[in-house]
View 1 (cartoon, rainbow, N blue to C red):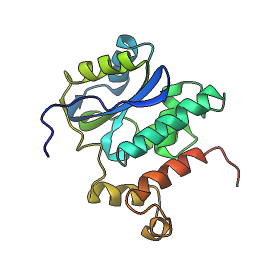
View 2: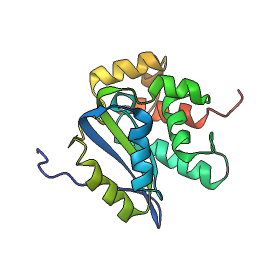
View 3: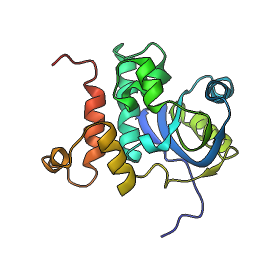
Length: 188
């Protein structure tokens, strides 16, 4: 079935907090800092992070990362003081902000974008409407393709053997990435 009408995919984190991942095709980024600042100014109550969609292994991955970030913030255990940077660190699988920015941060140019947002459900819906003015909304850029799977495995040094050894089956990469994100602060 082809979806002709797009609606935000809202995932509940608590009674009054939801999260979403919005995919946009071919967004022109002239200045990454200015681009992110416009979201912060327009939606000051939301936690928002925008990254190249290649770094998201599907909606499950995005949801788990946002859930981790929200819960760690609630418990005072975030990897960064700024909650949007906590999301970035988790997506980059790094506890170093400079490394995370280099690895998965926005760059100038045209990019398929993933916007992750956490906050009041009505504000998240407003962000969705606002985002639709920046480019064509597409779930496809969020979903895990074979090409993206190969790219993320190489980037994060995850072998096929690692996912084959789980009981998860389909979608194992999303869970492996989320697990690594959760363990960033752990000393093994």
